[in-house]
Length: 281
Ligand SMILES: [Zn+2]
Image: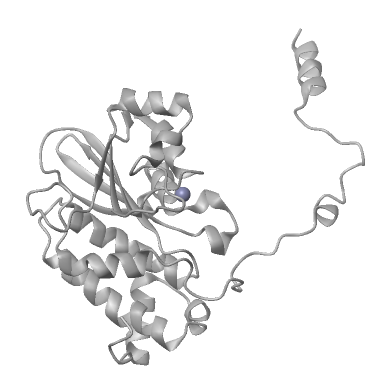
């Protein structure tokens, strides 16, 4: 990506900021090369990826997830975007989420977690797309630009279930843009180190994992090989800019935060529960 001269202009920056709903301070600190990548090269590649894709293909979903991933990069987070694609009664609903773990200082904001939260909460604001499903079969697909992490997301993917009047749903398919040999938990045997209960769950769900295939046009995970480098370079980067970026919230020292509470304080511990039971009796 460095071989192309930096050609972005302020107008591009403003336009992308507007589209992505970002503020100026978040992007002001980016270096020229990264600005070029974010505001010129990456959006163009994503657009091409989307245009050349078949409807409901991994390439099309990945283009949407990559777009979501740009929001993560731009706000100083590891570049991961994710979708939960719910097919229900012939309609497809796509919920989107991007990684905000670094800027919020908490792993509960990993991209997959954000997308699953949006699905669980039926969050209107995170519903990216509603359209006709490719068939009448109900299922739920999690799409992510990077292999879900072993530490937090793999377990959530396996254990999430959402019950509505249409029934109880779980994720039955995971589609992955790039493998993560360092922290991933779902590909190339890394899933073998899951706890036995999770392995059992995996088998019960009949969970399918589909990874990108840049060679075989008939493969379910087929993605045009012109996007291989883009996916690997852009979405396997670990944090774009400085390690300590200004958006990470600083929390109060516990002594300040809980100053008001008496030195001996408890809430919801066993004696409280016993007291509550006594009161009921
Ligand atoms: Zn994760």
